[in-house]
Length: 113
Image (cartoon, one colour):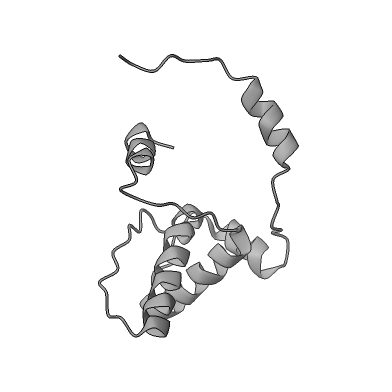
């Protein structure tokens, strides 16, 4: 993650949400059908978040402006969409033990003074 984004998260000014890729591609397809723009696969995460926020607003009966960043089109990523429609993409859950082992191997960095 970019240092500025990580810092904003640490300060509690933003919150993050993790999504599995199948739900993200589902959102990207929904967005493409509604807006005529095929999002890049990595942008589908933001699309999923915006859709989820809109659903939440509708359920709560609260109107809100929802802003998200569509950082790229998917014209060069059509194979990912072909794989999605072909059922070749799978959601993978990270093993917490493997994650802890990988993080343990990172060098320790002192916080700036």
